[in-house]
Length: 188
Image (tube, rainbow, N blue to C red; front, side, top):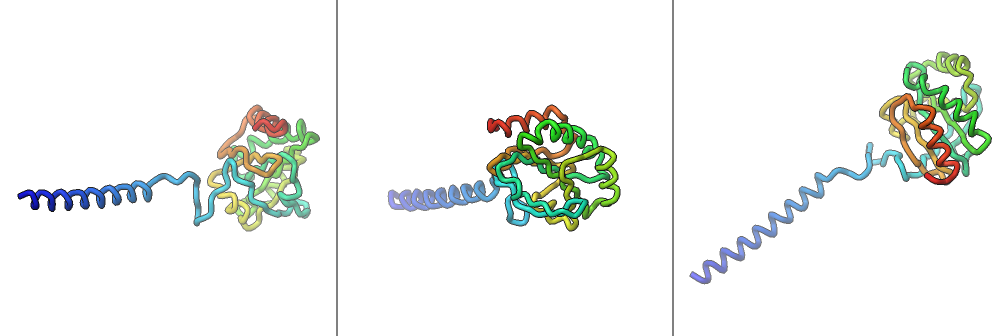
């Protein structure tokens, strides 16, 4: 009888260990990921370095993110068909006017692959936008930044790291200014 109890206890112990290992494996496999991933590539987010890109402005000049090392950069993805995008443009322009000489760069990336370039240009002219307006003709930069909604803005610090991502809009001018001021002071 003692031998039988010993065998049963050993099998129960082995069964318990296997069950716990399977449970731990299931928990590990079903855990939420710490960062969004699309096609195996982490999506740019707070704390990540902003991915580099080179685009052309509406007037044909080539602009690269790397041109602005040491500057605070606001990368804003927008389209002329997007009401929230259009609604926040004056707030972005006002912030640029107030802080552009202190090291703020605005890179407004028009999703030209899904927009009409002429309409976007006319909108920019009618609003008096003076910061670089870039054309993402084939959507590569849009996909590189994993943009899921319009508008989407990335606040990038002087070291090139993303300090904040704002999805949707329109952003209020006070929000834009507070983020920019903190980045210019190095407090964010």
